[in-house]
Image (cartoon, rainbow, N blue to C red):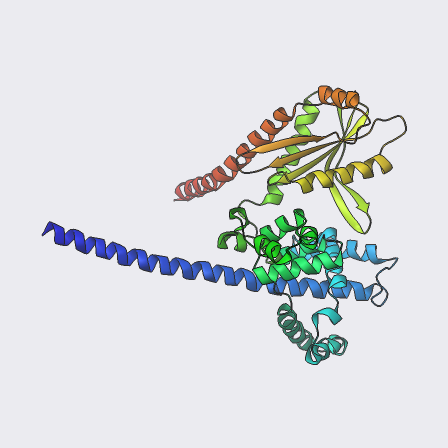
Length: 402
């Protein structure tokens, strides 16, 4: 009798595991589909925004004397109305996106050209309803022409060579690359390595294989920061909020560390070519008589972070350093969930003696990393405790009013 009960229980468990697995697959597939749908519409919207910006800049010419002012005003007004996601850098990316993917490129069919050619007529119609219907139909039509997620196109925008960009886009589509795999292949110069390879087919086949770290889960897809910003949603663990809190704490920590650090600015802007960047923190070190450029990243340390810091240092050396001051030094801080890394960028100094002097006078890298890690833990604990405190407060208030 006992054996029959155990057999029946085992059978029910197996059937339950089967249905649980089926339901889990349905939910994961639905989440992926939802993320892709939002991504395609978002990408189409950003293409249209980029087009409007370019059109406004002297009838579509690439340069306009008031182009920067337009982007700045749009950023302020759109952020005030819609919230995050419309920084100057983001709008510049939308503008560049349209310039690299013009109408002629995405609309190869006569119907596609006709659809977009009628744009001005509909836009100037007095009916607000017509404009709304046009916007919705345009988004649906354009979305089908951008099969990759917006984050992939953002990564492709950083590839300057047109042939290389087209190669990565084609391979990402052919191989179904995740954004992480695309990023890895670009960083490893897969295009250049393939071009130099004797057996290009073997190289393409090998490069098309995904590594474990390339996999993006359905939860990660739906929590893509670009998607959350576009929908006006806020992640439970917003990286932007965490980064802002870490920057504020780091600023206080360095100022309290001694009298050598003098605060210069936070989120200091610099322009390199047609792109705008922001440096998280800038200090002046009195003893070393040099600027300290600090860049904070939420995530692991990569070679791209080091390259970007050298870009900042070269700019600071040319535009921010005053006569009689020493070359600037960079500090890269990378904060992940369970660890933090601090790296000084001293490669640009004229000699090893000065580099050694800098290391002696500046805070130890381990000290800075430990401080970032402790601050992360405190911030995460506050996020965990805050909802509980609010719940206790509401319970207390309800009890008090009875």
